[in-house]
Length: 86
Image 1 (cartoon, rainbow, N blue to C red):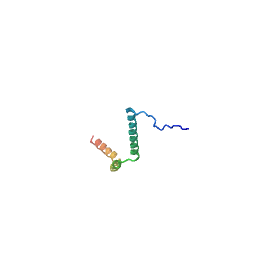
Image 2: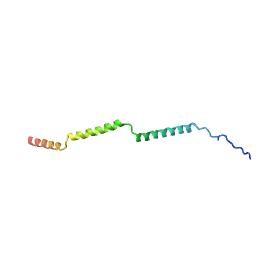
Image 3: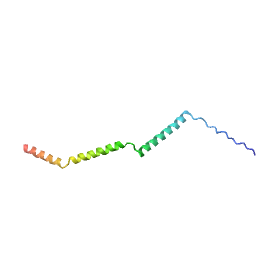
Image 4: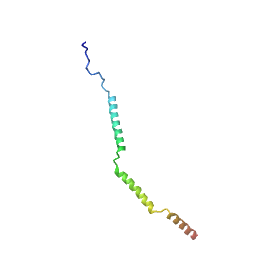
């Protein structure tokens, strides 16, 4: 019962240029996807968010400074004055 066991590595053909290009392209695509996912999970730009909140706060204060009730009154006064001039 002396059976010989073949321990030699199996014959695998060498990868062609197209196969290796495809393999490395897939690796690069996977790395790019991981970077994009991490960018969504951990946003790094804190300064941009602060600028947005400051600009919205600035708009809110401008609206408080200009009450909407005065503009119709001014229009009515101008209309009355123009009618008086006629």
